Image (cartoon, rainbow, N blue to C red; front, side):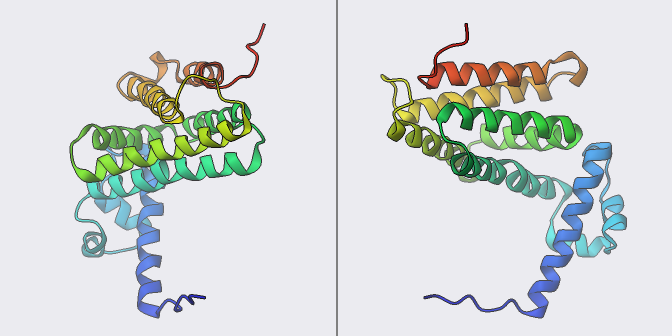
Length: 210
């Protein structure tokens, strides 16, 4: 059995400082938006020097990308893991996942828009990092649909990889429209509800509602 060595004092200190910076950024981005938040404000709330900030993040944009990875890509995979653990079939897993999207949008609208904008920019670029992020999302949804395939509640005639790509594409399309329109003019919550019904009807053998 591999035993993980205890973290040293210096490493614990570095993680603690990095955590203060990211938590301050999350609070300010959620309150004011990314563009209106300055590095100086993040440093003041985190109680760190400007030089310390740049020791961890070369720029505010790098911090946004780091948060995007942690709160969107990693969280998406974690939500799918939780859906597989807590829910018995594909339809209820998809419902759980979409409701979590809606909950996050409602609670952290400014932050979600900022991070989704960054995520979409990354996914649309051609660097290897963005490609691996998109692949990770596809793999997470493939895992969800593979579980349903083993249970026999996935519609026949489509590969689980295709279903995963359609799910990721539909989610990205809604988020893309949301971040490029005024929040009050795009019915994001209604779209997420429609997404839930569409995914259940497209991918599962659940009988459609009358």
